[in-house]
Length: 136
Image 1 (cartoon, rainbow, N blue to C red):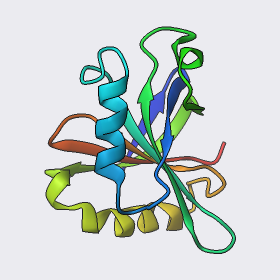
Image 2: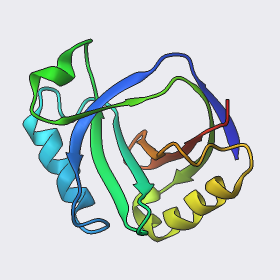
Image 3: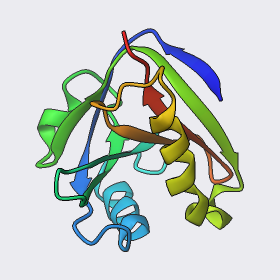
């Protein structure tokens, strides 16, 4: 695990994947095809567990300019600034079955804040960062 410091919050917008874990790829493809410069912007996955044990997952894209998110009829969220514990996953598309375990390990770390969502940062087609906010 490594630490990452985000100096500014990141406003993101997107859609809930109601068939999680199925449908994640399709949700990102649909989102990328529906917004300007869809293929040329950062993408993230947000997830958290509800009290009943179900997982809520959102496929989201970063704003390209302040206020862009309000132009679309998508759910708006924010990645908080601050420190995150991270795990880098190379060749992530062939390792999606490993992500649950990685996030489990991050949540078990006493430095992470389990009241915050798990965040997947899709840095490229090959590299993903699994992130959890640290306790302030």
